[in-house]
Length: 621
Image 1 (tube, one colour):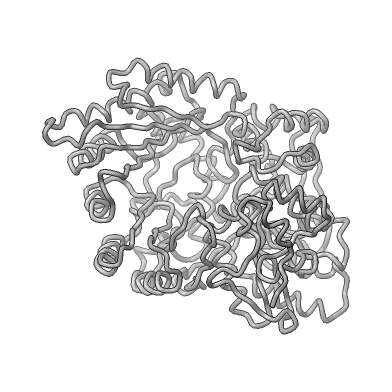
Image 2 (spheres, helix red, strand yellow; image 1 turned 120 degrees about the horizontal axis):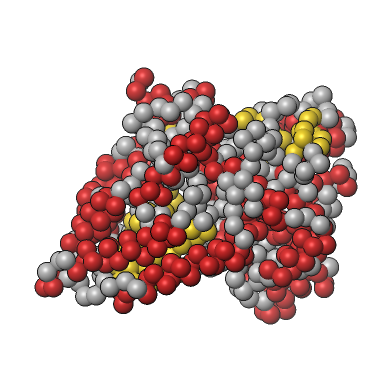
């Protein structure tokens, strides 16, 4: 019988104790004496956020298929337990065995969002692992980071031993096998890291030196160890059908953000929106076989007891077998009370037909993401969506019985004018107007159009990586212009407008394109008490501002200048397949307002064809 790391007294006084006890359905238990490697897989946020993440479920399943590895899970303890762990000097522990993380061979941290960076330091400190990689000894786990934020790992470079760039299913086995050999050899920690640096896709930050020009821009980025390559190539699984997938995902004890079976139907996106990092770093688009997806759906619903299944992809409508798959799910599960969730759909006749079969129209709302209010702006960002498409889609939805629509926009995009901002309100009003064109007897009550705008953050490996941002107060001013325009609309009683927090946008911008110097700010902010920065109730902007002041790091250097055409970026040593020349060409096309066709209409020579498969080769089959 395993002993819980927290006694009853602690469990009774903290919020949601089920976050910390493990033992969930489908969690994997092994004898620690029977394995060679213990791997703690961490999502640096609350349990219910981390349990919704498909990537961790995939790696957890993949690692635990190996008899010589036991992979367990760890999440950020919420602020109440954080306080108790520090006061009682209880080391952070993994859920399955309840053993301290520091006793593991690896601590793997998935880095999904810039605003979780202080939580990474919390995990290290509570685990009693030195924050800086250079201070760790043979006794400490190897700290490895993965996920989308590792496409610019530099702000976190001091805190990680290794970054895994790309999709986890390719070289982890090679890394784990190398670790076993090293463990038996009695060699030094440094020698293991030198071996890891030779595995494609792995980046060991301490084996690289950085220098800067007098103006603060990056001067050079060079390996200081013969085993470290000059460029690190991202890892891509070209056959997504036959790669590991969790048939028995762990079922959370408490309600997670996404309490459902997730079916990943494809990776990548053919669309090429110029602000979208995922659309560039996950190229080329690769589809899973529809027959296998049907089997996955059956098995996962049976093994979890979940009552909802969600199709996961950046753009589900572009999956070529979507109709067949959705028809199967409706037929197969119609009498079993299973809900089908279809995010990332383009609103067209087929999608609306499907949604009318799987949703309670009276309760559900439809989501469109025009991203920009004006056609000019949508062309700049390469959205590939006309106003006619939006109004036609909305009209079909209203005629089909829907009366609630959510519209997602972005403010602060490159070249944005006040007219573009005001068009957000006007387009929302035109959508509402389309509803009231339907004869009264055919309407389903009043319509409700909820428009939300986030603020644009330029991301590495996008055509907008050169773009400047604006200060927080300017973002807020732009949101107030949009809000004012909403008040002037004819159908304002049917319209609602929300906007994202401008302060977190500023921080996200610094960390998204930051270099190694930003690490000092993250560490200082953490020391000042910043934690769970993506949660409104715990976010403290003033402490972050204090951290910038203490470290002498200038926000405007990272956010308020357009990058030079040939400026060396902190992430330029990573090869994602998509070339810098293509991204620059797309930046220039954006400035001209020229639309680039999607990958199925025409190849634009982005460079992703070098991976030898996916959408780039569809017509050659």
